[in-house]
Length: 190
Length: 291
Image 1 (tube, chains in turn yellow, brown):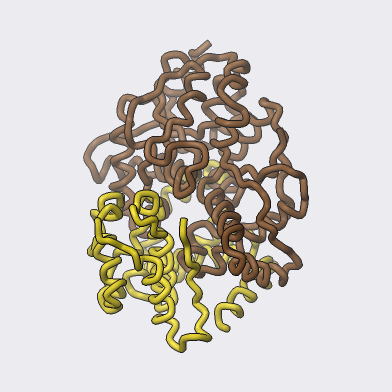
Image 2 (tube, one colour; image 1 turned 90 degrees about the vertical axis):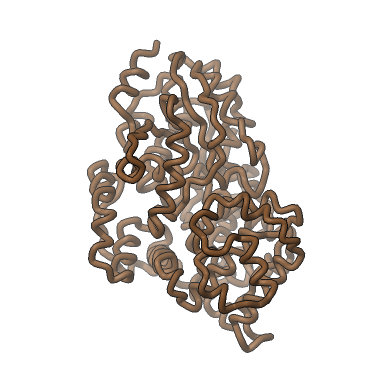
């Protein structure tokens, strides 16, 4: 796999969005628009732009259309497109880079995913290992939708009855990975 | 055989039976596991969707801890997402010196260093290539003849790194299943995505993908999995699948080492069978009737 790490490093470019988009464009530069990615994608049926069309928008620098698209948030990282791309492009990684950009900009169509992952990482930052009920509680709090927990309540209760999860209120904990997370944030700001 | 063991967060919570069954099965095969001390989360799919550097740093911390033990052993990972996260960092760090240096700048804050010289192996890889169907067959005391199972591989143990199987048309579980005396359900859904975390944030999409898999498994007595996320998606939402699609597609879902352990006569308790969410009484009596 040929990869080019996305640097959210902004020192060389004052606009972090432009820098991140440039990194994605670099990843898909050699795209021949064959559509193998779209044909391979298990989530394509739910997307507004197929993956092929999304790469075209990236190459055309059409950030407005990309920013409004649901496509990259629907990538479930199955790596079928990456495996099959005749140009050997790191397409799953390019989708991840767009998800990172969506999270950075708090894009609306990305909101559930962004808050879900942010809650997950908060729990990891606090305790080193994710605490499943703490993470879901943080997610529900951030989503501010009183009906959302109801959707997960039946499964939560089944898991609790099996003793697989326990009620854990969000806690700061020991800040187990505070140093590592802070260092990452510091480097990404530089 | 000895491995450094990385259970990952799920195996301590909602996928506890995967941990229980993996340890029990490998102990019965005289495989030694040394749990990596002080291990932390690999970042799951959360880090990659949030920060490129964090997605490297979280697995790198675990790898550095494992390398520090210097046991000359590979890391064994049962969860496919953990496996890919750890493996990806080793592969990238080996190829890109700049990435390795950047990772080590982060790890220095924890007094750790990554060399990226350790092997990362998925449980299925170890079962197929190190333990092997021959050794398993020698320990089978309760052949599961007449039971038909659908091997489900999911994505991230197969792709993007084709290490031990064909990433398009995987077959690596088949010799292991054959060693138990069970039959293989012929299907083409074994490497098709279960929707991963869509089930939490875009449930309609997740239900659609799981419905396709469960429908194709009709006629099998059970689906076997090798990933906690696949297992949860296939076992926990069968009610919603029935309500959405109007058809009852209930299926028995269990982890591969649980199934292999049953054929070796390990007890339900030893394999954590009581913790699964979708095992019917009919299936359990079917297994119990095997001699």
